[in-house]
Length: 96
Picture 1 (cartoon, one colour):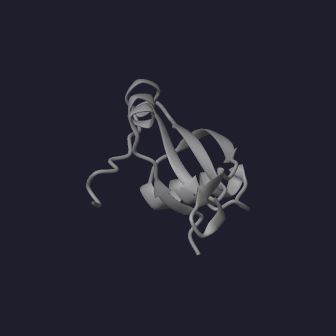
Picture 2 (cartoon, helix red, strand yellow):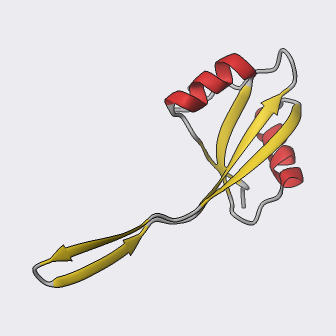
């Protein structure tokens, strides 16, 4: 089982990777910083300096329809922002 689920490729994450050498990944919710660091180093062959994690809460919404009230929510996710050593880079677009 891999700890890394997928890289997050948004405008903010791409800018952060270009300016600060930080890459963003969606990871398993039970993973800690040490496990994330080892997984990134094993998967991409780079050296990691710092790992920051973010727990994103689920969004809840309510819709009023003809059939009644519909409740829904998104899944809770965990993001990891990984800062690499100077001169290291991850090319996320080669595997697509």
